[in-house]
Length: 318
Image (cartoon, rainbow, N blue to C red):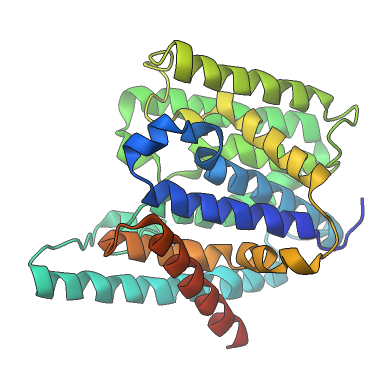
């Protein structure tokens, strides 16, 4: 497969981060009326698929599987790319939380053990994704080593781990706690890793995934429109992010890679830039929605895109 940077991946990330902002800004009743789980609600699963895809292609290109499990170059790059922005966001979240307490008397600071998993001091929506990303960076090199040895068996193992974790936590671990562990998000990562070898929508290798994506969509339709209580014993609070629905996110990514332009197009470069800045925008929106000063959708989206893009530019130039 070509090794050049794919413009289409940045476009998908740009669309996904805008969807995240809409998800956290649009009132819940409107989300229900507009069937958010079929489009905007797929934003995080799409990010997870793209994580597996991007890292899989990067590891293959740099031949990381031939050396130690954690190459020094890889660790340094992750620290620079994610560690520095996270630490700055952590400090900003602490300041915002304390400032809010002084002004309103409302203490939103949560200084507990979850900070070790990547939660910001003043938590906002989507913080679990940052925790999952940190854990992903730690376990992906090992997953890739296994994948190079036996791709099919490794992906099956990834799905088995995800399914086992979700079933176990449905009975023994509070939902709010389980969301901070990567094991409940491994299925889309596994799909992305599989696609890193061959991204073609209808290749013999991927045809079963395309079919599974259609079945996954049918599952979501059935659960949403026909039998809302279908998942009452299985991950009931997050139908869009379980093993069964992950194939739909995988299908959306494959369709995006098939139909979105692979080479830069001038009129789409702003969306591509938003995709490149998506991690920084995500950090900003956690802090922003922990306060949620305006509660106006268009303002929420524009402010977070602007501040997140500026944050990305500043940290990249440092």
